[in-house]
Figure 1 (cartoon, rainbow, N blue to C red):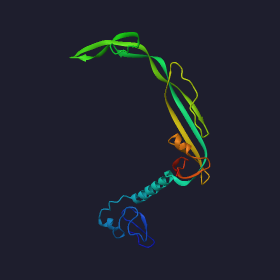
Figure 2 (figure 1 turned 180 degrees about the vertical axis):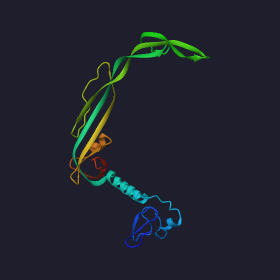
Figure 3 (figure 1 turned 60 degrees about the vertical axis):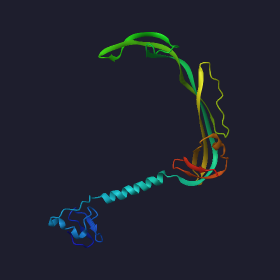
Figure 4 (figure 1 turned 180 degrees about the horizontal axis):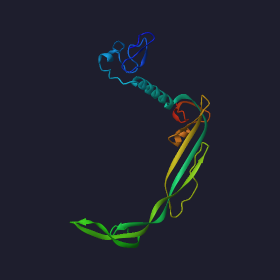
Length: 219
């Protein structure tokens, strides 16, 4: 072991340590036993570098939390956006297959053939596999309406004789300017909440780094 002046060297792992260090920073061996290797003692069961890795992981975790946590700020309403979409299905002919006896009554049979349908007591069982055409309601298209105002409306359209309006989706967003002068946006849960945000009014809230509003207090 080197003389303890400015630094001392561990006899186990050859790590250099400061004169004030009581334990080796590489393997954890105490200063008083750092020359025990020469006497045949086994080294401490501490792996080199684990302390540094642990501290690095803690620092990285803290940094990630700071980056993903929303920041509190003042939000001023600067605009709106809305979109409403109607989903439409259309009745179309499709080709399907089924076992004989399971064909829908409204189907038009196109043909059949014998196919293996299973086995009973070691004997193969065959049955007619029927191919048929039938009309099904299938997704066909979507009709959209949207704008930047504060008054939403449904798309103005008519469904055809073989069409069916099966559902709809709604999107309501509010745009803000933060106290730092950055743009943020909030997706309201419904039209009533969206309508409650007045142009130019200020609110307290929290914003993610990508501009999404995580929380806005309306009262």
